[in-house]
Each structure stands twice: as structure tokens, then as C-alpha cells.
Length: 214
Image 1 (cartoon, one colour):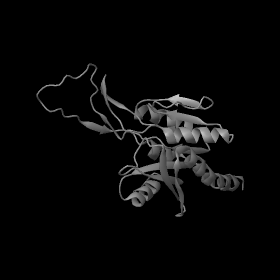
Image 2: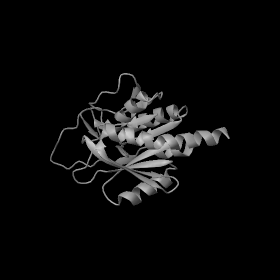
Image 3: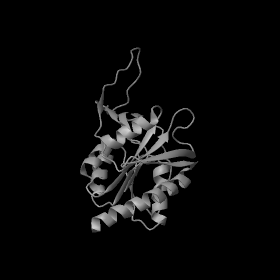
């Protein structure tokens, strides 16, 4: 199971809170995993990109919707890669009609969305769980804290500071493993990095499968 893309949190019928994620990395991972023979479920937030036609895709919008679908689908997954850029907050009030501007400032109270990765980590049992960390500072420290706090088996660090942000065709990834080791996957297109990440995950998954058999 792979989550990808942003989530959107509506304020009114024409405005929402979100982020610039395109879902390109998650889509590339779904395509590459399918080519390698995996039975893939892609949970995809709103994006202009097309999901692979041969991948089972469930489209969602809000974080709460992705939360429900992800927890349901993860039950049958050997590997979960959480690559989605989920909105951490949503407006407390969603207006049914468009808000019209006036002379006053607009104050919007926000409330926390459910933490999808935290919930997956609490329930994962034998599932191998991989998270993504898109960081602008203290990159390694923040990634390692997320790895520990969310009970992940691995986390892929993506530097989105300066001109290395969302939506670019190329990126860089570093994988940190639960055992304290790390692997630099270098830079490249989302397709190249997806293949490198799956190459790195394959022996780890075999180790888990062998341990389960014994």
C-alpha cells in the first residue's frame, strides 16, 4: 500500500488549505512496484497527475478520508509506504457558501487532523512501514525523531528547502533504518529514486519474511 499526493481541507466551496505536493513520488513507486510483480493499492490525494492504469487506486481528498482508507487497506499489506503530504490541520468551521471579503482581517481557527502515520505505526504488527520526511532544516534530526516516534521500520528523507521543494522532476533521498544505519540514494528523477528505494527495501523485506517463517 502506498499513500501519495496532498490532502486538501476546505474552508468554503472555493478555498482550501493544502500544500504543493504532486504525488509524483508515490505514483512512481506504485508504477515501479507493479512492474516488479507487486499487488499495489495506491491511495491518492488530489493531483493533476494520472495514476498508472494497472494500479488499484483509491482517490481521496481530506486527511480524515485518507486516514480511514489507509488504516483499512494497511491490514492486508506486507509493505506500506506513506509518501503522502498530509495536511496536519483543518479549519474548525467549513462554510457552505463562499466567504466574501470585507474590511476586516479573517481569522481561521485550525484543529489537528488525525495522524495517519502514527496510527499505522501503532497497528503495523508484521507490516514493514516506511515513512517520508520532507524537511527544510535539521533534516537528519527531524527524520530520526519521526522514525522513532511513529514506530517506523525506515524513513526516506527528502530535503525540500530552498529550490529543492515539491513538484520538481528530480529530488534526493536518504533512507534511515530502524537499526540505526542509513543509505544515501543520491539524486535523480522520481522514477529513478523509486527504483532505488525499492531495491533498498527488497532485502529488508526478505529478512522479515524469513524471520516470520522461523
